[in-house]
Image 1 (tube, helix red, strand yellow):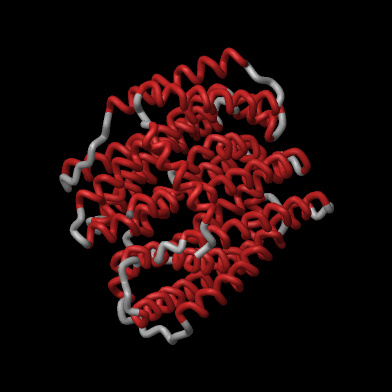
Image 2 (tube, rainbow, N blue to C red; image 1 turned 120 degrees about the vertical axis):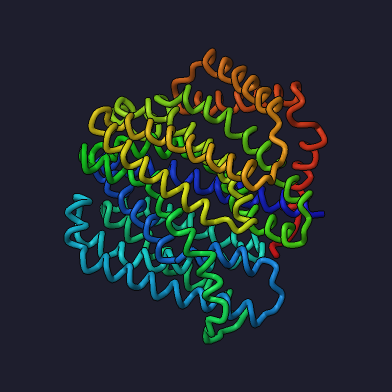
Length: 488
């Protein structure tokens, strides 16, 4: 049954996102409390740089494999497609690493920290790009459990080594070195696995033009997406100094935790929808989109409410009172932005299955230009609150465009149940009232209050008929079945 596998895979990707969530909230206090906001600002800039270069250097080919090879059964075509993409990515990633290395002095001055960190960054970029392709292999063929094992291992090892490096006195150098070592090891292990599965071949590049025609138009969108989600760290550093990046980034990290709810859908929908669409099963495509939107909003909307209410307490717990005093007002705006981005991800799948990636590229280019203009105007005047406001306005525009293009211009509509959305808002308001009444202070009290709020919210969803007992039983049975099976 397609729904069963899709649900199982969503649960696994949800676990991956939970691990990432835990990682962010473990590393955040370690660096902010032991090294201070300035070093945390540098750490964030390194991560943001990697997130910029990876989609550029991979040429959109990792995502292309998902679209073109998900339904492929010919082993030779799979092998040639994979190694052709690998060769192109290796060439681009190597070039990007060399450029960073040759300009390491200037980059180090901008980061406000040591030259050795930037030199390690050049190697991290190369392995990040290659790992992105290897992870894409498992995503393409929906080997989600294997993906989970490799991703979880990398994340856990990274957290452990970062903490060890900082506590042993190696500071930011130890943290960045951990990123490099973990990526090198994971590349070796995943590479061996893929080679054993499909063998080794010299790429013939027989379909590379077709791949690039699909993948290259996604690059402007990827760059623009990076601009709207990450460039504010660089602009804050430029206008206000790296210290304010250290103030802004923890609040952004906490608010962005809502993103863990959309990742399972963004990860799994492209391959699943492409397969159904190619089989002309449009009713299944619409059913998956309706299912995804409903469950995403049921998780994201109350999270925006809860994070906004507990913003100052959460930042104080996970960083320092100094950082909380400067940045707690950022959380509601960023949380709303992340929620809108999640809805965009679901709507944008319509453009992907119709191969209208150029439309996504166009909207992201416009959004990036608009975002930069607004950021340059608001950050000097309003500081980090101006950056958060820019995020919120920009993502509203992006969501509006993609909804219009998908539903009106293409005319591929699926049901958006406004009554259900209103009920989710009502249940969220009740949850917030309960949390506000409890008014937690300590970390244990906050965790307990979150649990009470989540349970009360779930009860009201049931009472309002948003989620049926049948759906809960279905999810519970899938979870039990998932963990009773051996890894594929």
